Structure formats: C-alpha cells, structure tokens
Amino acid sequence: EPEVTQTPSHQVTQMGQEVILRCVPISNHLYFYWYRQILGQKVEFLVSFYNNEISEKSEIFDDQFSVERPDGSNFTLKIRSTKLEDSAMYFCASSGDRGLLGEKLFFGSGTQLSVL
Amino acid sequence: TQLLEQSPQFLSIQEGENLTVYCNSSSVFSSLQWYRQEPGEGPVLLVTVVTGGEVKKLKRLTFQFGDARKDSSLHITAAQPGDTGLYLCAGGFGNEKLTFGTGTRLTIIP
Image 1 (tube, rainbow over the protein chains, first blue to last red):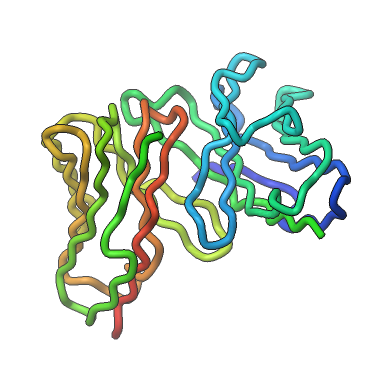
Image 2 (image 1 turned 60 degrees about the vertical axis):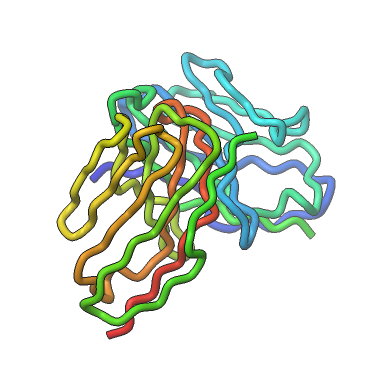
C-alpha cells in the first residue's frame, strides 16, 4: 500500500527556534493536511492545503505556523518560533480527493517534536 | 465547537467475546470515519460511513452510522488479541477538517 513519509521521526529543539517538519505525500494525491496530537490528548486538525494554498485552518494554526509545497513532492510545516506547548506528535496526511465518496485519507507515522 | 465522545475510554475483555464501542456527538457530520492507531504510528483508516443508518462490515468488525448522523458504533465479534489497539472515530465533511474522538483503548486478553 502507498505510504505518506515523514521526516524526521523525532525532533528536539530549543524554545524560540524555528523547526521545519517534512512530509512526502502519496504521489498522485492532491489534498494535504497536518494534524497534531499532544501526548494523551485527541488528534487535532491544524491545516488543509489544496492547489498550492491553504483551504482550511484551525485556531491552533496561528501566525507562527506556515505550510508550503516547495517542489511538487514535499509538503512542509514550519513553526517559526517554537513554544513549549508546541511539543506534540505532528501527523501529515494526504488523499486523492476531498473524501466525500469515501476516498481514503492516509496518515504518515508522525514527527515527535519536543520543545525544551 | 464540534465534539466527539467515545465510550468506553478503556475496555479489556477476553479473547472470543463480543464488544461494542460508541462514538457520540451533539453535532451532525456528513461522514464519519473509524481509525485504528498503534503506538508511535499514525491513524490507519478502517472505514468511512456517509449515509444515516449505514452499516458496513469489515470481517469481524461492524460499523454503524446513526440515523441522525450524530453517532456511530463499532462492534467486534469474537475479539482476537490482534484487535488490541486504540480506536478513534473522526467526523467531518469527507476528509476535510476532521474532528477526532477521545479514543477507546481496547485490550484483548488471550
């Protein structure tokens, strides 16, 4: 089965530093997403991205966050100045369409971000 | 804010027993998805239900979407140790902006 690949699997950073989390979605997919899961809490939606622009974002996705698809294969999440509360597992996901007819959403294995 | 509450939060049963877990909301969703998540991994989609009253079967797993599209259930028949894991429901408009539930951690005792 095709896979969404995320790198790195673990990232440790100092508070205030910038981090970039990288994702390679499934090659023919058009819709891309970032979710996060703080330890012991629910998976939370951050942002959706289609046709090279953000289509939806949550209240979590403030000005410190940005997403980019720089080269047609990678999909990145940048956190400009990390805070302690940004520590979480970040999941990238992709799908071939919006899923209204049940098209599957594929999640990557996640990047565990630890902000010290 | 849409919320999805899952119950029970934890369930531990003997191999061979049947079980049902629930996913409830006060909000209507156009579709509801069930995922299974292993430790250190991303959620893996099991099924999507889109029509009120819809029932889908996946081997020993039966998923039902409530008539009002506010709730769903997952029933497992003759549970096996391989069914152990975290089960998540997620509601949304297709794959858009999914709201995930609180999760049910299932343990099947051999």
